[in-house]
Image (tube, rainbow, N blue to C red):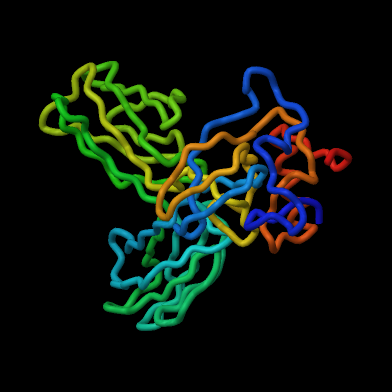
Length: 319
């Protein structure tokens, strides 16, 4: 394999210097971004310049809920997420009733990922958990597991006091705060919204199901109607967009190459440091990149292809 280990320099080779891996890049730093870099395993980590990084985009939280109107009552143990998990709502429907009921479960894209038997450990679709029975399920009962959660809040100082239905987090949602501001009051109260990056979202009408920015929910007018200028937020607890070394066994987005660290950096335990990364429009030297020590040739080829898709061309003829 070409490249250094990110855990330590190879014996006999000096530590990579800042930006030494860059052959060429766009003018005026257009090839770079400032991003939050986190330590591995929350333990203090020394990163070499040239480490290939991935971005955490899927959160570690998941919530279980029985469907409204279900007869059965189940409880769910700890939900463990793994490779292949999708952000959003997994839905399950009971196909065999009883104390050891069986449920077909589909992922957030609607693809069947397995059959859950109450009382038996389940693993599939990037989820692992065990259900316990309280009241026997009947055919047609449903439950959901939501990967990534969200919270609604009216902004302080608002006149209106509307309420929000359960928020469904879909694939593609961004971790952070979505802000909606009332632009039209009255019979068809309307809000404009922006995502955590400031991108404009489709307009929202109070009383009408909303689908935009990876979120689905309905705002209902409260005892006091909203007026122009009122606002509310929806905060999504998804991946925190922190960067870590690429990890082929990860599920949270860090299994995909997202950039290359420019400067050697020390990150203390349980802290985050803002760093510069090359994330687009650059040519880099294969021999100066730093990979995880367990990287296979196939994994490296895959990450190099992902960098190319970002506009970062890895030149094997440049060292």
